[in-house]
Image 1 (cartoon, helix red, strand yellow):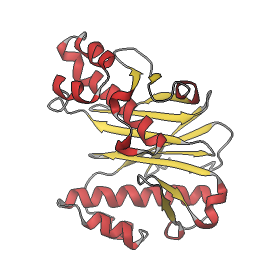
Image 2 (cartoon, rainbow, N blue to C red; image 1 turned 45 degrees about the horizontal axis):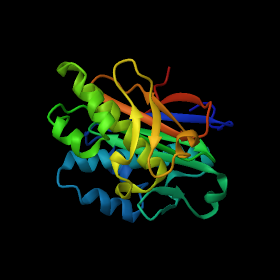
Image 3 (cartoon, helix red, strand yellow; image 1 turned 90 degrees about the horizontal axis):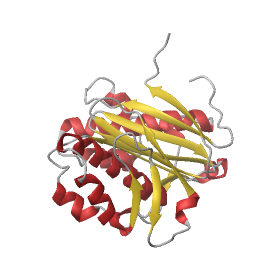
Image 4 (cartoon, rainbow, N blue to C red; image 1 turned 30 degrees about the vertical axis):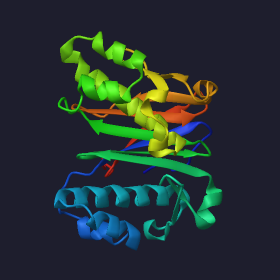
Length: 241
């Protein structure tokens, strides 16, 4: 992995391949906790069980390197809405992280002492409808989407969606924060930004929002506490030269 230290204002963003293939799944299961194995086994489709298992195993291996611990020794606690944190002795390490996966890809964002949220979604034009936007987006966001040519709307919809989900995940409040209670910037060539938060105007200056390049067919976004972060992009499994 090279340098596994986390400098001030640094965010490491790991792209993880979770393609639903059986190779290595049993090995990956061995590093999971009994609770994680039970969660994996709840998925109806085998490929979804594999993807969950691969994502959690990768998360444990990566975080274990930062923490200097074997992956199976990591313990997690969960906030009221399910956001995980390192627990036990490792709680004092200050390592913060967030994981998101969709279809065959996942992102793990890792920082030190900075709250973080990440979201990745596979673009699905059938979901990116005006009806869904009107249900979840703010009025201004809906107008921005409607103003775009129809061929650009699916991409823009998921730019908006991932930016909003990344913010929700950073907060750790789950669905208790309505998606239409805050606004993000989105659209072709428009940088990610948190524009307004109805329930707390001060939130706008607390966070930074970034697009993450996820490859064709995906959109992803990152939200981090503070300003002027250094983003480092990494890949798992690592490609050895």
